[in-house]
Image (cartoon, rainbow, N blue to C red):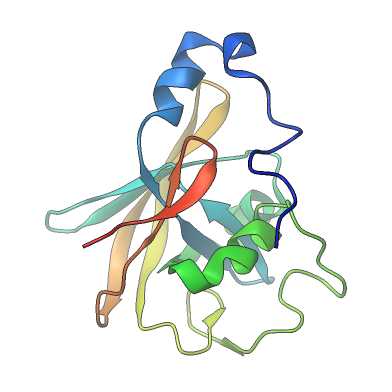
Amino acid sequence: MTIHSTDPFATPDEDKSAVRRLRGRLAAPVTLWTTTGPAGLTVSSMLVADGDPGRVLGLIDDESDFWEALETSGRFAVVTLAPADRQLADRFAGLMPAPGGLFAGDDWTDTDYGPIPAGADTWAGCRLESHRIVGWALLVEAVIEKVEAGPAPRPLIHYRGRYNVLEG
């Protein structure tokens, strides 16, 4: 439930840089990246590059607990999120309280790459290959070593600062 139709703390459009306004007009998938530790982060600035091997590229916060744990483990899981996962996405984005820690209160399945939500049927196991600062983020490039591609439910999408669901 929400009492506002918009985010009362959001930066007004006219105060955002042109680049940020452009980025906000691009729909992005909402994914959860996890690694051993455990640590995790909601990531929507990411893409998958097909090839041999396939790769995942993503922009993350280089000061996040997730990055610190990933530097140590060198491996992570990428889980696609569905509309029912909005609170999970907010929790791992730091937008919602997480009493007991990010992984408390939910069931998780351990993998060689990091924990994934119990019942998650679409995810990838990735090995960190490189990273570098790009703009105000850390560009992470990883090789996909394992893919589980279950049924394709409607994805959770981030667009103009809000979650959306594809129709049709």
